[in-house]
Length: 359
Image (cartoon, rainbow, N blue to C red):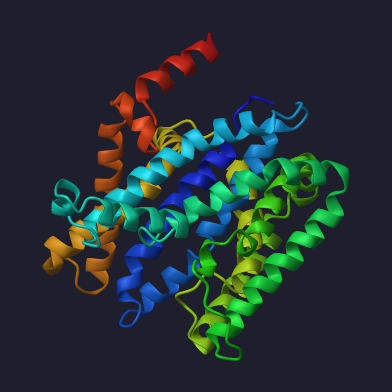
């Protein structure tokens, strides 16, 4: 059970790159057809991360007695909460919502209050709502695990109905078919929007061998399903002008077909041992830091070197520059022990753990 599932490392690395692509192409959507298709094709990324979180969390726990609730939260929160605090404050200051002078003067409580508000809402920057969602799902996980092991069908159905209804209501709100009430927290930061993905990942871990054997040798069929769901998403986004949202039924369908298709592809490359395979392993291991850091690198590049990124070539170069600069800084930070507090992986500790396992 402790054996690492390398196929999921590949998927997680690919999902991390997909999130970067979404944010890079967002600035080109109105004028570039390639950007539009690329952006929509990557819309599985955040839901896929949540599926992977549910899968890997239950895969590790399967067959083991559950930890006491407090011990479980402490173990999980220490990996996520401190990075969430750090990056929320950093992005609040970087975006100009709070000034360094206010921190150093007698008005320090104003930026602190603002940062606390963003922490609760997941609005410190465009991507930080995801971390808040993960924290909510961790709180629910022990209950979900007991429910799953007692009666999986009812859990799947309940989570599907809740997430499906929530996403449909938001979708109809975007279409101005109905008006949802304003809340003090954005709907995107609330766990019901994402619960089914997490439960689906847990269920996939529970019956991994069964559904894996059913899908074996069906890669072409999965590819067709994936392409059909992508076309449906493209048509939906174009017709309804909801291309900026990953919260709608068509994305749910697209994410599920993407998961099965990517997983079966990854299984065929899991034994990849060349340079590409090692890089994918590294990207997966450091994917959380890459996720947290990349919007900062993208913003700095777009702000200070705007003349370098016009047109399709500029977009492709911006994606490459953002990815490389993020990976490079992540690599440098991995040599610092303190990097574990901001979402990174301390390279020396990780190397020692690998040597201990192999030895």
